[in-house]
Amino acid sequence: MMDKRRRGIYILPNLFTTAALFAGFYAIVQAMNDRFEYAAVAIFVAMVLDGLDGRIARLTHTQSEFGAEYDSLSDMVSFGAAPALVMYEWALQDLGKLGWIAAFIYCAGAALRLARFNTNIDVVDKRYFQGLPSPAAAALVAGMVWVGIDNGFAGDELRWYAAVLTIFAGVSMVSNVLFWSGKSINLRKSVPFIVLIALVLAFALISS
Image (tube, rainbow, N blue to C red; front, side):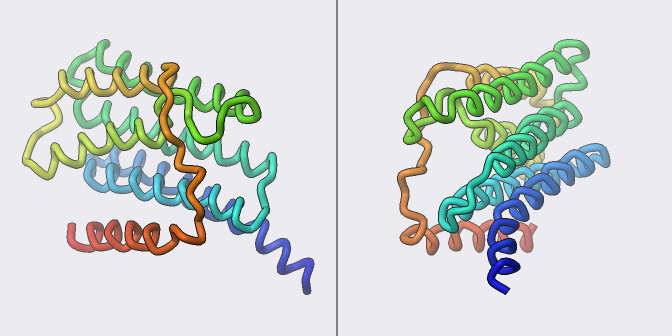
């Protein structure tokens, strides 16, 4: 019985990672069907789930090399491929070659950012990230899509702004600028805040 319970505890963080991966995949599918607001919301949902899986693993002392690698692959889909494809379908494709180059710069930046994070994980100060974290970059891209749609803008009206923002986000991920990681926060004291954020997101989804 204890072995089954322990196995369930180890699986729990990976379930959140899988849910984040699904949200990223869902965003891609919705973008392919021109439902860009749903796609943007899905990326933000993936951000919440991604923020929870690592903290749950640390709280339950179930960190593993498998979990770290799986989380990285999930991040590449949810915060690398998905935002690039959503932005391309919404605004960048009207720019032709420049549009897909901008989307690729973002996607490559996310891949390089995640690879650097994995190789430096035992070297750098865990209180800070080197380069803009991929979830934050995804928030910039998805946030522009979401805000643009809510304010009645079509993607082609903002295509040049979209290109600049997408390239900026991609380059920022591979920069050497330090960003606070938030990993020094005690989860036991932060649960109410996390729950509040989840409730706000749920309300936004219901009311949209």
